Length: 602
Image (tube, rainbow, N blue to C red):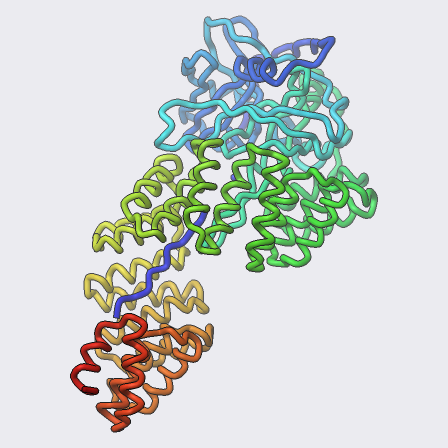
């Protein structure tokens, strides 16, 4: 018996040493707002890439004294740099400069730091704006360098627009006081948040994009959870001025910001409690409902999440993220038409909403509209050519139309962009296994497990590949590992039963198939396979009973008719019933039944 293959989707400290003291540049107040293109040009001139031994982030050119430039960034971008370690800053002209790690200074109580480098070149310095003038609903822009993958040969600046969802005059935990809807990615931390005059009003911090993931999917959520430390934290530090801070939210917007922080930390219940307070104070603010819905969805309270998205949409019928997220919740409840309708609405409001195309593709995949899914993944990739999840998901759709080579090409692309995408490794392994490249498949599953040692599906799929090589003991070990991680993983029980059958451990195989049926009483594979083993053990009536169950669930299961017919004819002398079963199997296209009928019923 060939094991079932389950392709899985998818689908972000050194002690500071005091360095040179710089004067804060005076803010330049513009007379009129700039266009998005003009602000993008400003962002390109002032944003730098910071590369550390632990990873990379972004920063903004903020001041200069002599040939020494000061860069403002998020503390968590540079906090891992140890004494003696080398880190680099890449300026807008593409030149790389050694970061002076003796100059790293954390600003007290906030997620903000300054670093410096030396250069004889002339670089544009950021103009600082009044962040207190940035209010809910205003447009802001974020610039930064997303973490590169192998497909990106040089750093690429990302510049995105969005709106402020909350602001606070008092700085909350780690200095955060601004949240906004911009689409951001890991690596953009430390980059500038700019107002409509092209002035820096904050430093982008945590919560760089939100995903709901499981063994079967990776779904992008536009949450509005981005957080920034306002620029006044820097100017107050330079001027040695007091700065009001608090760890206790009081206003509705402060509770929204606090809730976003707790959500980003994985404290979903705490986030919900803060969103409740925000809604109590301001019951007509859509983002509080929308974000509470996301937190409920992470706790698998999908009906509760949908109720919150409904409220958000009632207040703001053009809130694209609420439609997108409601669509995701409906998918979880298997309301695929409802999910597709919501993704349609999100795309109507925002035609360049790559995540909504990706998620609509997943919903179409769920209803086996693989070509429609591929079309949506194509659109997501057109909008964002570095969208690794969309490549991975398109690969899965191609796999299901048996375009295994095309699927592998998409998984390759996903891995070039994101070398740590465990889903893509596992899925590529499944495609290789279907091409009988079992060693290649095992190598991919090994990589997936290196990235995520608790990836139950990768253990199960590696077991499938070992089964293909007739390494039944190795397969059983992998299935057992998968079950240790997920005791309700029906496919792992089913496949372990297959491997035990290969070792002639028939009673062990029956025990595993029975476990499957305890989890999913309608699993035809388990009934069918258990029927085969019972017949092997001469429990003919038990075998027929299992084939009966298969046909109750799937009246068009040709192999079950053939097997039941054979047992009836050869074992219990029910030639009439057995031949009737064989004729039914023949009508369903079963060639073995045709041969059996010629031999026993003519």
